[in-house]
Image 1 (cartoon, rainbow, N blue to C red):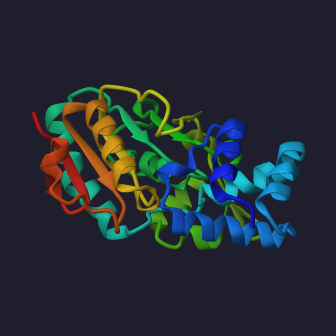
Image 2: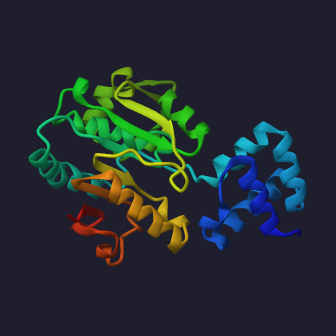
Image 3: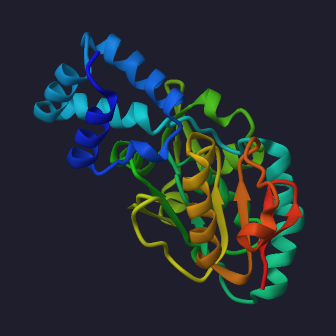
Length: 258
């Protein structure tokens, strides 16, 4: 099979995603699996096809960015967010909160954030920035249509209040959708928004190399307010967070150190 190094360089030129930042064993396995499924025997023929076929390229990006999400993923973490993190943020910010759901995938997390925040603020006072590298995922998020399984962990009160079920699928209400602004951001290349009270980046860092993680932790830290909180996934605890100017607030939640 032709050189994976050449394939990585070609992909970076084509779509601006640098595969050097991802753990090679995991990424090669994912790419090889998709390539076989698509019917290509080597990297050269697969790259050639993607460079000419937008749908094949979209499938590659969607597979690469691992769009797996659900509402209230890891429910115990959402309890901590609602019961402890919100108290901390409200103590330090008497106005509206700046919240960023990075790597938002198909929208379950930012919409969960809006619903949770609706327990504390009027909906018209809530605004979430949600970003992802995959425009296909963002398009799905904007549509706001979900299967029942993705709502398994979501409190019933939110399902009853903010969803309409039709033919086995659930459509989220426009009043929730309007509270989220979706944008494309490549975490490794693009500038980050600033002055954020809460940033979530969950179930993404596990795919990056240690060097890429260190770079991202520093960028996330700079993007937070002096009291801001960084929310990570259930397999992504930061070892010695002080190296990146964080201190542990609760498990999976880190506060910026001043």
